[in-house]
Image (cartoon, rainbow, N blue to C red; front, side, top):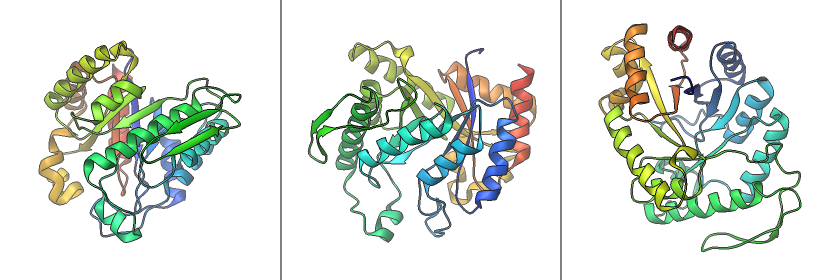
Amino acid sequence: MADIVFGVHTGPSNTTTAELISLWRHIEDGPFDWISIWDHFYGADGTSPDNLEAVAMHTALAMTTTRVTCGSLVYCAGYRHPAVLANAMATIDHLSGGRCAFGIGAGWATFEYAAYGIPYDRAGVRLDVMEESLRCVQGLLHHGADHRFDFAGQHFTMTDAACVPAPVQPHLPLWVGGAGERRTLPIAAKYADGWNVPFISPGQFARKNALLDELCEREGRDPSSVARAVNVGYAVDAASIASQFGPLAEALAPGVLTGSTDEIAEGVGRFINAGATQINLALRAPFSLEAIDALATYIESR
């Protein structure tokens, strides 16, 4: 368990910049090595547009902290051109002194697409867009400032493209988010440095993790070269799960830690035994410092 990364995933929805900055500082003062933000325009229930923009908050996270990796879980491929994302990540890497990590997903929040008139294509098309976007970001970020990148896809075209200045990191980590076994996991196996999935049971994680191992081997990659992160919630008891997640509580409960420090340890251990190399506590406003401190107590006691 010595190599397990612990982080906190902080949703910039129904909150303020001041509250997030205070939260990030509290997290970094603890035994955590990762903080991330999500990419949405509306809250998860689709009713509240009270949401801070992700690239701006990723930047704020980089400039507020000094030690932790600053991640995104995950940018929606349908919301921004990959050149915009690549250049933003390179700049955030400079602002953070080389602590940026980039994550991307196919997108799922139909209400956001509808509200802003963004075409919401069938899943296969959205996954094609995600794969092409990831390939473009990889081509722009991973080959240095003197590299020029050409790409001809169905959705994106680049000709003699460059991203200057290049990131501080020689290899800025690229993550793929999602649970899909037919497309998402094969894309992660082929291109990603890390795979992230939220709120699933240890058993589900173990099955998908084993499949990702097989897919990496088919690509000629060492499976251990792809990090495996799970986002988990925290609740004192079942009633607290219901109050946090409402109608989604039953579906998300297998991915929520509950109870005492010993019970948290058991829950984290099940995910580690299932193959997770990173555990992220996923929080949304109102943020629970008690949840952060409970996981911190566990980490410090290992």
